[in-house]
Length: 249
Image 1 (cartoon, rainbow, N blue to C red):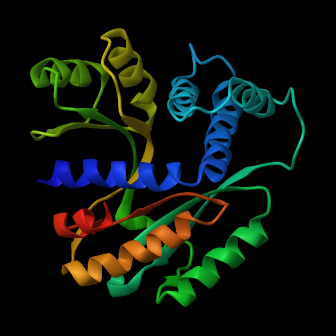
Image 2 (tube, rainbow, N blue to C red):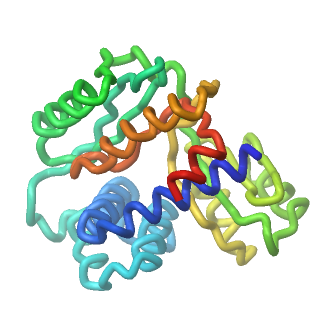
């Protein structure tokens, strides 16, 4: 049921973000800005940008906001401060490791808010390198299992350079080195396969299993961090039990 757990976690996070549409648009814009800055403003040759735009459109982000974010990423529009990507490392209660991904124009503000949130909820900020060794940066693709041929996707993913493909009745997950993101993305797109979630993720090398009450406490910390304006996403090594996700629905 690991895939079902991950799938429901994706949906839970999406629902929570949809409820805060203004904050959602800010995060989507930042994704587009960073993607355009790093890989250029043409979505046909920049799959990370293409995915960011598709996600923005799926969440009804206005076209003018999308175009403005692309122009800001390429440097054509210099409005606003310079954005930078930062990973902060920390621990939630019960020793759960977290990589906190921020895109911010104010490093001091981001750090202060993250530290305050962790201290308030029983977590702690870690030194650089204290947590990162427990994660590996990977290209990640989540595809609904329904309506897709697992054998065809497996063959396609391996040919495109994927390291691992995992299946269950709900979800097909593809993991690859970051350098293979474009190749895998292009192959999926050419095959007409609809991707539900894609991006560069910090994937834990090992997961921690907790009792439901303890896992719910950790999720509360993660949700509070992801409510912060500068935090794009929180990666953890927590395995989320099904009953905890059911309660969060």
